[in-house]
Length: 311
Ligand code: FES
Image 1 (cartoon, protein in one colour):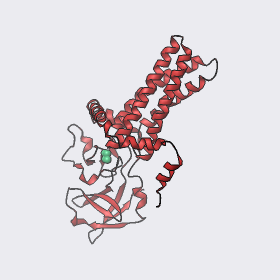
Image 2 (cartoon, helix red, strand yellow):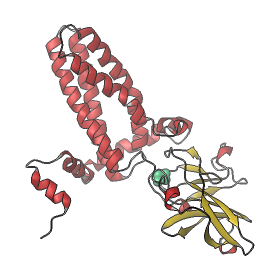
Image 3 (cartoon, protein in one colour):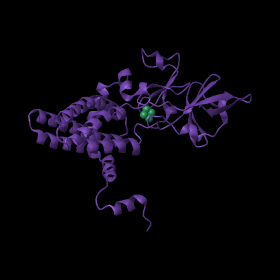
Image 4 (spheres, protein in one colour):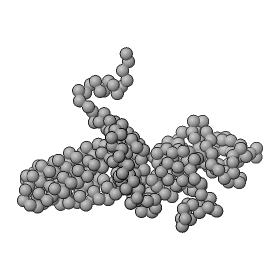
């Protein structure tokens, strides 16, 4: 019988590989009650708005968590290495304290992103967060032990903290690189359409003011006709690939969220509420941080809509 590659890899290793453990966590419904209550709490504390957008990284154009998490990880790793050499106690303490301070913004941004993920991603994210919390606790205990004159215990606690942080880091990588949390899910779209103009559909086959999905080859496009004006974006939301044509469109007459005139002319993804400008795909609200690929449009004399990916 032919073996699939993953099965071959499993047989080569006599013990569970880290990725096997991570995949088991993805499929562990036992974590769901904790996921639900933490997720509800995060959504209550961080409702949609500018503060949550900033935590997602919308103003920076990419998720803020991966950048911020480097500070605690870097400081704690350096502190644990310094512990191997004599006369480095003061520097190690400073690095541990800096790492603990840096873990606070890293945790806030991580929780904001985590609250807008799919359930299997949230399970992995929960264990990732628990590992980070465990690391922060152990390094705090290490700092206290060192301050109390228990240097040897402090070093052991640091080693334990670094182990927990490394496990958390691995799961963070699994979440981002294997499960695609944080990456733009629409980035390849512009490259998949061939160069030049492509015929899409007849303009008056499109309903007025209601978005629909149209296929360009195997690409799904969000298409909105407003009178004789047609706007086209990738239909696959940059956040996690949600169907944008099923989202809510706010026109100039409908100012979207009360008190937020910036939502006029935008579409809001039905899955987690990312909001994009229909004209150019730019991000108005997260959790998405990457621009939605937009297409240039023109209508021929025969009434055919033609599209071309925007540079
Ligand atoms: S898929 Fe999450 S906001 Fe669109």
